[in-house]
Amino acid sequence: MTKNNRNSNSEAGLRVDVRHGNVDQALRRLKKKIANDGLLQELRDRQQFTTKTEKRLKAMSSAKARRRKELSQDNAVNKKRLY
Image (cartoon, rainbow, N blue to C red; front, top):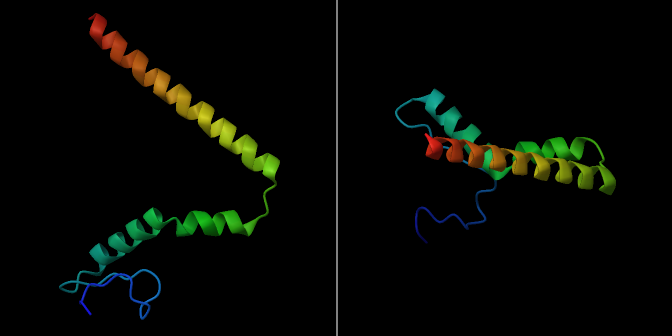
């Protein structure tokens, strides 16, 4: 078995090693891993029940926001081309 086998069942969850006694850097890495893994968002979602209608409305509003952002970026690029 290799040393860095990520599929091993002996270790559950996220793990960050502290290198050279630098705890601050290890905390930053742990926070980044938690954010990328989506653990905090899942916890927040599980705290309160949301109906299917609420989920659908939230998804629609976020899609509209993404579209607005995309259009504004396109407009900014087109304005730069004019000048």
